[in-house]
Length: 348
Ligand SMILES: [Zn+2]
Image (cartoon, rainbow, N blue to C red; front, side, top):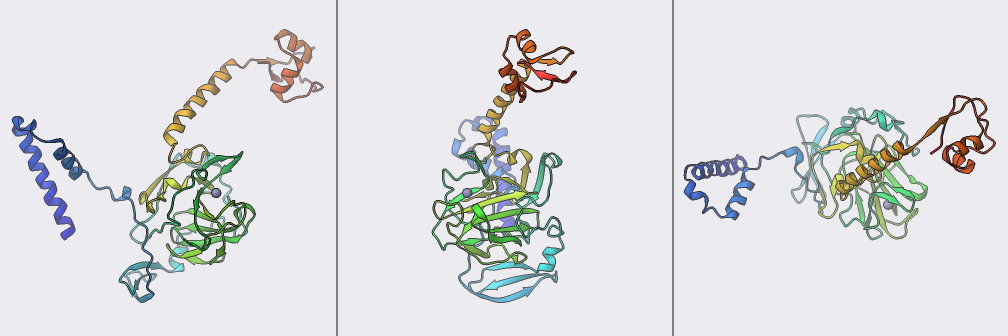
């Protein structure tokens, strides 16, 4: 009750202050700007779904007790230093059904086979609720060259967080380990599927503490940092995927502070674009607009010819002021290609 009392009192005070301000116009000029800022802050309506969530605190102590809750499959674990954590039994987590679909422990990054066009434009995902907790996988700075985006002709589909070999790496949320194996460029990789359908990837580990099929709680040390696989130095390569499609993990996590940005995450399909990332999305959207315009202009400038009886490539080239070579390049054909009557070929 104490927690509700304070803000209500303050809110009431603000309303009085605002009324007073309107009733006495002469007073308006003397309210100092700092005071207005204070008023604004106090009038903000709380939106719990959009509030950030602090990383779980690692307890140095061992669990000392387990308490039952109203739900037989949910327990509260109490640690020696009075911190606590929910514990959901595997039966509870299994019931969500997400672990029955496209469960491939042998290592497909997209076991769902979903097509991008089948997904809606936006999708709301609860990251934590009253039972689900969060732990930052590894708190630190994202390496400037380790962001989500294109890199040396490849898709870099996660973030790189430099660390020391042996640093603990934590499960971001509760769930079940889908993949735990040494896998090429990923090195030692653990993939965890969570109840909300998201999957998180932890790569280049020096040690894996869980096997495929194991259940994990948020904060469990799933492995130790390392430099296995395609890696030039010790770091955690961390990915977030939905239906097999990767998006910038920085939409979810502020790795510098370790905080989860919000409880409810609105995933937009455009985030799956490798050019979309949290830090530059606005600029990218502008650039994409320019790219769209350039494509439209290119389409408008295209000219097509429908093959008629008696047409040859050299005749078409001559009539359109171009060369046979240019026609072949534009249409991906060879000079010896048989020209089927009725086929459209691009001449410009
Ligand atoms: Zn990486």
